[in-house]
Length: 210
Image 1: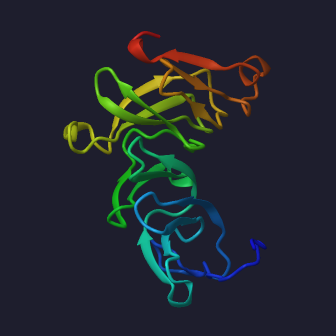
Image 2 (image 1 turned 180 degrees about the vertical axis):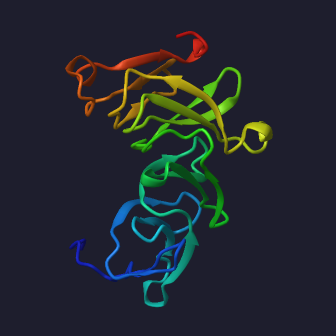
């Protein structure tokens, strides 16, 4: 039966993606399961590596190492569940990983705010730019929308297409729902109690309006 007994241990120690310095004990920031392969997507914080761990045969484990960006944190899937969007929060970057091809698609830097903290992020259809994934930030009040459709909206794919102004910095999570036309953004770490104890709600159909 299921015992939760570990069957395999995979080390995360290795070299940083930028300066190639050895790190003896980097932390795992987030793990998600691929929808395309029998793989776990493992994001290693200090080294900036995304490990695609194929568990089909754990006695002959296959690990694909993708150099993304240092200080990886949390993230979530785009609406197709093919592309994993993960924040490298101390680098003000969103890394886009293709879980079907097991490769890095883009490091989104231009337009990303200070210390992005998406949780899983929020997916919805922007009326002007098409499918987007959104993140808020710990370090400033911005909410950025990144285009996620390289087929039908190629010009908008993997770039910040819209920036919204929230209540303030200190945001941890951003949410919506396929049946909702609202975007919800918190800011619990904001020093202003009125801001930290309230939620900003945006109308997805009227994002141009303040």
